[in-house]
Image (cartoon, rainbow, N blue to C red; front, side, top):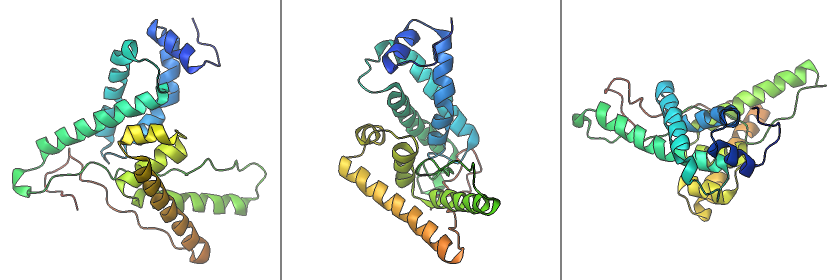
Length: 222
């Protein structure tokens, strides 16, 4: 049985709770890439990011029967991922970091560069405009890579994924005021980067992400 092209969140949830495989495939197809993008804001380790997403899907499957639908499925899945990411990155840090380091590794600073809003299609633009658009996208990606963890996560969930502010606050455990501050600072940095590029062609320097907890213990967080 195939899920129809258009399903409401409640219809999709009902199908999922009935064990409809087509509905679950539909959910994975729509959410896997965004979840992976979010996971990468907690770690720069590709393998750990994949593990976080897989743990998230396990949490989704196990939690479906108890999910009451007070939030959207999308928001619920992002919330599960945030919890799994904090647990897994902390666990990896404890396992891999030598005690002698004397410094606790902080999750975050993963690499991810996306627009703060969907860019316009290139259809109809001349080659020079297309090139300039690609150049600007590179600048935005660099600016996002350089954002602190909390700002990058806020921009990703609010501006890229389009989640309501209340739901972003719940996922990131922020107050509305703190979310507004993180969004303002993140967006301002991106705007400054684009302004600098427009004026003199300069590009932001991406900051180093957190130490990969699966790499050598010689790496330390700043």
